[in-house]
Image (cartoon, rainbow, N blue to C red; front, side):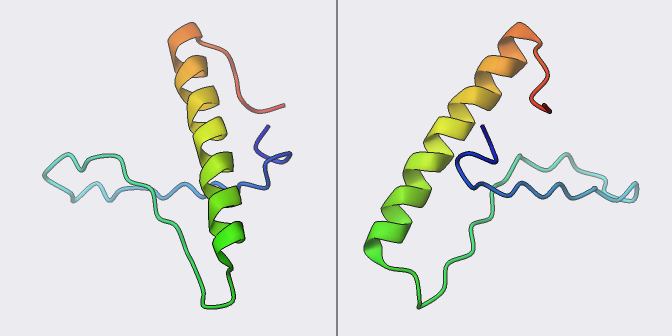
Length: 65
């Protein structure tokens, strides 16, 4: 699904020195070359992938295929 929707997921590791638990975050990179249609397509893909991730967390399935 992630490959089909052209979504690149990069996981960052938190430092063991972090004293507070940081909230989950999503960073999206946009350049001036992106069109409005590009952004709308990206938003749609992110919604699909987010739904898949949340569903997999609820039923314990593995996303890596």
